[in-house]
Amino acid sequence: MSTAATTTDAAASGGAGTVGLGEEARVFFGYGSPRIMGALSLAAIGVRLGLGHWSLADLAVCGGILIVEPFLEWVLHVFGLHAKPRIVFGRKLDPLYARRHRMHHRDPRNIPLVFVPLPVLAGFIATLLAVSYFAFGPWQLKFTALATMTSFLFGYEWTHFLIHSPHVPRSRVFRAVWRAHILHHYKNEKFWFGVTNPIADHVLRTFPAKESVPTSPTARTLGVDDEFTLIGATS
Image (cartoon, rainbow, N blue to C red; front, side, top):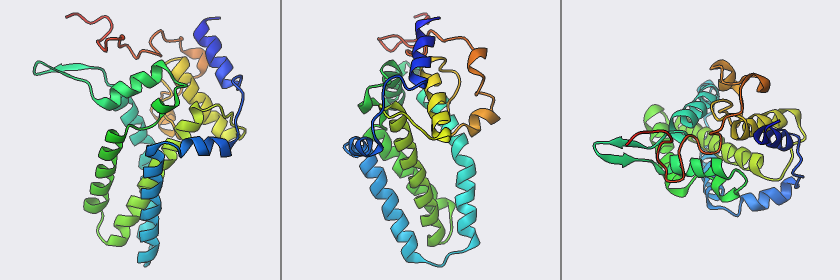
């Protein structure tokens, strides 16, 4: 059995030990991005509750975001986080989010690398504010959308952190999510792109049986060497 396969099995079986959720939450909230996400989500929820005037439209907005979220997560992971450096008009294009994600793949247990970088988070928040404002009519629906999307963003950060923490899940649902992400890191980076749930992976056929795909030699590097140039690329 290869080293990568052994690592995958050990991680997925909980061989690293476990830490309680309370202790993990204290670590989690010690970082800036969870505090910002949590504060924004709570503020949006508070404003929405204060506005009142609930309707079926609120339910439709929440349901629509619920449907879109797994696929948006998949698209951002595949085409954003796994983007490789490119030369555009003679200049190297290598966004911060892609560089940090490669660092995360190289050292999955390095907790600071798990979190969304603050400059990237600022862009996310600006985007969510713009979408909420321009895509929805009444203020009630604007804040319903904002509260829902920021809550999902916070949930993503917590789930991703918990997967890479020493905590070993006990629930069947979270254990399945946790195992799939471990396989993405240690088995093959071309599959299992969902972090909070596997819906998009199943629909888009990137959730194979573990035994059906080879262990990737680039699961840690994402095909980019230490100098952040494309492996195998010609100059």
